[in-house]
Structure formats: C-alpha cells, structure tokens
Image 1 (cartoon, rainbow, N blue to C red):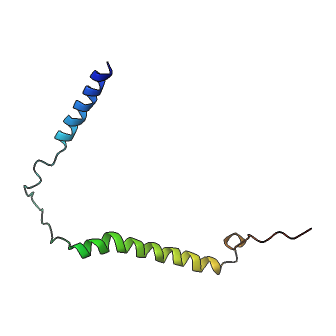
Image 2 (image 1 turned 180 degrees about the vertical axis):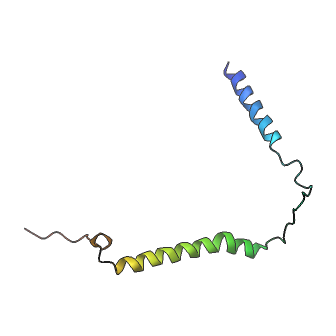
Length: 84
C-alpha cells in the first residue's frame, strides 16, 4: 500500500515538473527585449557586496542614533550589583 502511494506521489510530482518546464523559453515573445548580461564582478557587486554594505549602514545608523537617545531602554543597563 505504501509503495503504491509513493509511486502515485512521485508520478504526480514528475508530471507537474514536466508541465511547468520552460519549453518555449528560447522563443521570443512580442515586447521581449533583454538587455546585455551582467559580468561576474557586476553580479557579485549587486547580489553580494550591496546587501552587505546596506546592512552595515543600517546597523551603524541604528547604533549611532541609539547612543544619542534619552530612552533608558537603549542604553547599557547591566551594572554590577552593589554589595550589601
């Protein structure tokens, strides 16, 4: 029984994958005008370096602006306990 179920699931999955394959990807459509491709350096800069720089800028601004805040919850509150 489990083998039949596994076969049916596998067959259904294979059928869905075959139906969704890009069979006509090489055929140009009306209005399809792709630009020039990206070089390796452009790709790395766009998808690796730019997100890292953006993260660093946001983190830096958050740290700098939280130091100037009067909100006591943004400051270090881990003080040593006073001896009794």
